[in-house]
Each structure stands twice: as C-alpha cells, then as structure tokens.
Image 1 (cartoon, rainbow, N blue to C red):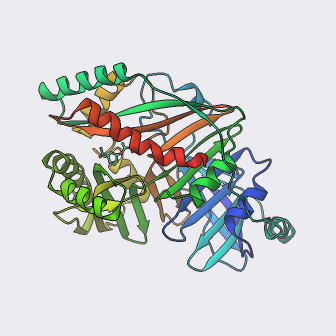
Image 2: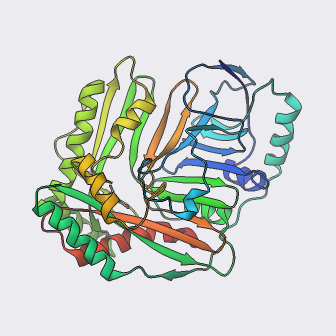
Amino acid sequence: MTRIYSRTVPLGADIVDAFCTLQKGFTDQFVYYRKDRPVRFMGLGRCIALPTLEGVSVDLDGEAAHQPVFFSFNRFDESNPKPTDELFAAFPRLRLMLPEVVLIEDEQGAFLQVNSLGPVYEGRVARFARQAAAAPARAARKVGYALCPDSREQWFSMMDEALAAIAAGRVRKVVLSRRQELVADQPFSSKDVLVNLIDGPSIGTVLLYRYADVFFCGCTPELLVRKRGCRVESMALAGTAPVGSSEEERQALAAALMADEKNRVEHDYVARFVREVFDRTCYDVDVPGQPQVLPLAHVQHLYTPARARMLEGVDLLTMAGDLHPTPAVSGTPVGEARMLLREVEPYNRGFFAGACGYVDAAGDGEFSVALRTGVFDGEVGWVYAGCGIVAGSDAQAEFDEIDLKLKTILTAFG
Ligand SMILES: C=C(O[C@@H]1C=C(C(=O)O)C=C[C@H]1O)C(=O)O
C-alpha cells in the first residue's frame, strides 16, 4: 500500500509563467498542455514513481479537491532490441511519475498541487504559491539552430524496402519516419522551446519531459485516448495534405484529400483498428463511417473522432496499451509493421510516436501520440516525423510530406 498526501490550492498566477519561474533546479519536468481548452498539467520534481495505480491510497487536502496527477511517457517500441538512441538512453524507464509540484489549469481556474509521502505542510504550499504569484510574464525567445539534412538516398532505400514488403503481402501499410539533426550555438533551452510551442501557431497538445539536461518535447495533434468517468474518446488521424497559402486553396486541398483513394485507404486502416479496440472494451461505440478534414497550422489530416463508454473493469492504462501503436504510427497489420520498422528504420524512435500523457489517482486522464516531437541535449537535437506508406506511395511526395510535418516542431525555435 502506498499512501500519497496531496494538497491542492487555488493559484493566483498563469501556470506557464509560474512553471518558467519554478522549474529551475528541478531534475524532472513534465508538461501535458492542451492548447484548445484548459486541460493543462505542468509537473516539477518526483515524489514517487510507480508501475501501476494499484495499492495507491490518497489523502487529499487543501481548498481544491484535485486528485494527484501522474505523468507517463512511454517509448514507441519498448522492446525494440536496437539500442536506444543515445539522447533517449538518459531517460529512466518508469511508468507513472508523480511530481512533487503540479500546476493545474482547468475550467475552474488555476491550481497548485503539492504531493508528498508524508503530510504536506501548509507552509510548503504557501512558499511555492508565493514564488508562482511573483513570476514575471514569460517572453518568447528565438532559439538559433542549423538543420543537418538527412540522407535522401537512405529514405529512397527505406521506401524500396517498404514497397517490396507491401508488394509481397507482408504488410498493407507501414509508417516510415525520418530523423533530422539540429545543432545550435548555445544549449537548447527547454523553457524557451516550451514557451514558443505554447504561444506559437501549432495546434494540438504540447508535451515536455525533461530529465536532468535532456528533454523531449513537441506539439501533437493526435489523441490516443481520453477517459473521464466511463466516457472514452480516441481518434483516427491519418491521411495528409498541405494547407496551401490561402483559405480558398486550403479548402480545395481538403476536398482533394477527401477524394483521394490512397489517403482514404490509409485512414480506414486506422479508423477500423480504433473501432475494433472500442468494440472489444466498450459499449455505446460511436465511430462515424466517413472521415472529416482537420486543418492544422502546416498540414491537414483526415480525421475520425471515436467515442464510447468503457466497460467496468477496463482502465485507461489498459486501453492506452490496446490502442498503441495504432496503424497511424506503425502500419497494418500492426505487429508485422512494427517488426518491419525494427528492420528498416536505422534508429530507435525512443519517445517519438510513443504514448505520452497523464492519469490521476482516480484513473481519469489522457494520452496523446507523441508526434511532431524532438529530443534535445545541450547543443544537439533530433526531430522526427513520419508518414504512412501504402501500395503506390511515391518516395519523393512522402519525403516532402515529412518536411511539412517537421515544421510543427521547428516553430518551437521561434
Ligand atoms: C507519423 C506522423 O503522423 C501520422 C501519419 C499521418 C499520415 O501518414 O498521413 C498523419 C497523421 C499521423 O497519424 C508524424 O507526424 O510523424
């Protein structure tokens, strides 16, 4: 039995400004920040790391009754025997991490949560609240970097392997990715990258996991699973087009995307997969038969929302495990596509395209698929993006599509 003491109080400060001020000196830092609505959690420090929520009991205190918030950042392919890329190797392999301090923003306002394995003294909470209230307004800062182009030849040879596997009937779809290296004159600052993503044009959920000097971050449009009580949501997001340079052009590109056979096939693999997982673990399943178009800042996608009610006995972490990886980030069939990726991609994806999110001690929470992300250590960073390959995919067009997707994370530098 693990007893957690958690005290939450209202906070008279903007949580991002507060985070920027409080973060100095904390080795572990976590962010799950939805930009479209106030579902925002920013964690500092580590109170405890646990493999599961089983056996956890909670002693809630303070004026606001918030459950303690655990963060969870998971690798794309936990058991890929290929060595983890060196920047990711630094991150500990922990499942649920409860920060000492969590800044929360929801429909009710902003809150400060302090978690501990013993009673939390009011004075400790008051000290953090004072520091947070005195936080200056954040300022955007440009982060200079040079992009080292990845090899086009390597991409073409990966595409050959993928198309051969499709032609041989081994897979019907596989999601290949590219990795680019960034080099800066000064060490990358997680605070600046975070602020630029939160205040910049990218649409989606901003993720950050910092451990000591290394950090992983980005802004992803793809929800893996959200749970509130028995209600669950997910989505199929696959099939991509540019947004063009005017609203008129965007709409024409959206119509062409809706009518494009190859993109519709790619998308349907994902929608069918999500529906199958929901049909097995939920009831009242609602997954529309036709996708719609979701416009983002740099690209637009075919999108199908999925809603259901979860059966008793199913929980968020099991559901996240059943859904991840979807065919949107691995391929179809999922197992064969994962095996093919282990063979074809020259690196281990680390957290890129992994399931990253939070869960509270009552079991509610959400996970996103960590797309449009990068990992940074000192003056070096790697950014990642991928795209779905099916029969007839064109290597050059897919290369260009990844360039567009990479723009999301590259806006993080101002
Ligand atoms: C793999 C990525 O994106 C995924 C692949 C998509 C596609 O192939 O069209 C679209 C959205 C995402 O599900 C990425 O952004 O890295």
